[in-house]
Length: 260
Image (cartoon, rainbow, N blue to C red; front, side, top):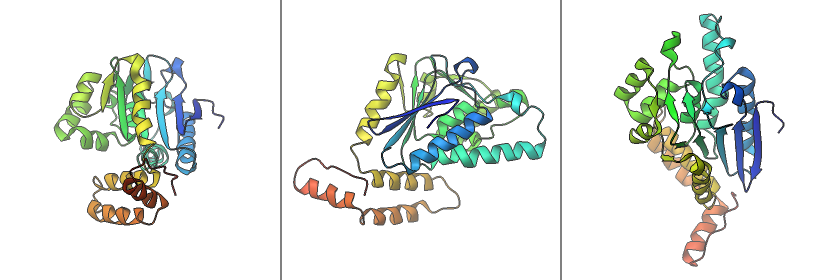
């Protein structure tokens, strides 16, 4: 996995992905989005990877937005294609990844950066993080799922306020409204993410994938979440992990899950 705009490495079953454009505040350009699509597809298929930790390089920004220069001259059709491709290949791919993706928000998460964090399953922010969707200041709206995911996370009224005012909010405010799970001092950001991931890695991987699928179904208008849960629940019974988990419980020992 050799990338120009990302750093990636597997450590202790976690794929660490760092968006490495510090001089550009880790802004999302086409090349970076293509690499993110590739690395998420890799994570989803690789049996060694149990989870993903996504962060930005340097102390200032997680991702400060999209690279505006790349689409400043786009037509309506080109803009629509930009949003559709980005959502399908990156943002929806992260949300639907069977491996939990944890965003470690180490600074500014604005525009596409906040949309990227919201596509992740769990969000942890450093105390200095600032979050917002400033697209209306450019005559645009969020195009990578931001209007939908922000509404799901914080409710319609707060989402409309954040999007129409384009105001940034602090990490503390983000935690208060449910936009992030935890806020910690900057030096504790990665350790907190790793603490959560260390617990996740002890659990049954196939059950985790089923849980992600079922939870995602809860917010899809075209899917019955209860039916999805029933189906995923049933699938778990056919796994070796289920046999191991129940045997370990009955034998009063710790389970060792193999993801089979």
